[in-house]
Length: 560
Image (tube, rainbow, N blue to C red; front, side, top):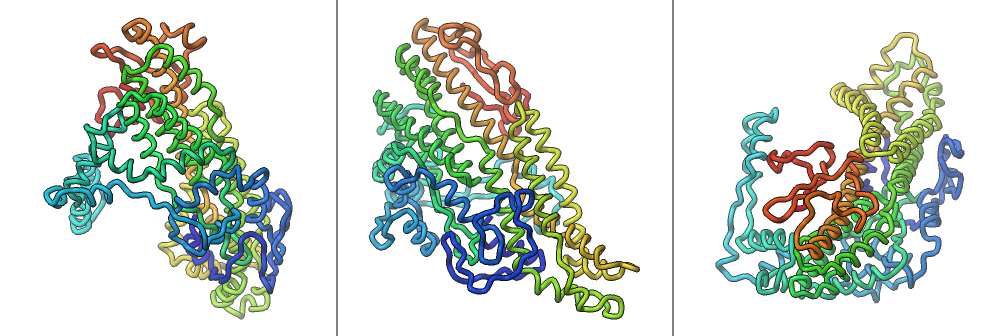
């Protein structure tokens, strides 16, 4: 969540969260405020370090925990700093300082986007504008939507993509080049783009050789807050450029160089996985996906000898497992608990004003209302219980069981969404307080309970992560990894026998002691021969084969 999102949260919860100043990890607040939060494991989860107002300094905790063993020499983030775009200059300078770099002397390496390179090197004819129509299924979804004719027409116009001929061409070329080995003569524009980004590729290769990855949490708030910490910008095209370069090398029969660049992707995926932010986990899975696609493309190309395929299969079996999402869920927990502290810290005065404005003074005096404080400890305990359920869901055996457990949490959140929509329709926070004030014989404890529940609902709804999506992405990555290993075994079998096996069982015991199963179902992967080649697939997140259905409706993960 961004700092802007945090302020939206603050607004919804009757607060005005506008802090000035900058703080890397320690609280330098000159005037601490009293916050009614008990520091204990069942509430704040951790009990130290503390800010001046007595709340937990989660930023300092995360920095201390994840910087253990990190040095200037072993940290890949130090090597990659020249690549990170300085879209927030002040924060990037503070991150550089925390990494032991001199921001004034730091050199930037600019990664050139493919479309920019293509337009700069295209003929006048190829710079002509073209309009790309939407896919039929996009139009179908739009027509089915509950929209007014005016809105539907405006959205229909926006479905058309305006681009140039050269951008359209290189986009198609890149998608093709990602699927198989290729040559410079075949896609000269792609080859030129890779050459223009040679310095970026070299930095990625160098970083992949380092053992650790750590980007410090740097907050510009006081007390420091996780939601205000900047995450340096990352381009998915970095990994894409490595994948394309690997397949270019494979196309010129430089298999050693190709596999080395794919190994860079594997190593970078595991390095980024050391960072417990959710965005870093998603980057890690993206890099792993690109590595798996590269391995599969070369395995399916027929370029490998039996010995080369066997050697590569042995190498990929030795890869470390990709990160478990537990650390990410815990970091999201800390962000939620920290956001509760932000709300508690900033909401007191605004909360008192709204209560006094809502309640008639002849029923409850302003002095009585000002003594009401929300039950923050209850809010924190319930948030912890929710995140504990998320961790337990992520540890369930098998994808189906994980999804069932995660769905129970989603069902709870859906009930919160319905309540939130009703809250919005009825005037938001101010309207809620008015309705509470109109109840007969309402006491201070009941007011406290009702408003506490409302604040907890908002915090839960806003801060909870997409657990089902995270678990699905992780299982998709496992599925591609499994397909990669089987594809390499199939390449070795064909190199030795001249044909692909009639069934995957033929790979036992030479290549596997036991056949790998589909991570989505725990059952056998789908395999069939087709015109002398093969089709190998995982059933994907819907846990059933979509063979024969339109691509837009299929979530199968297919090697063909």
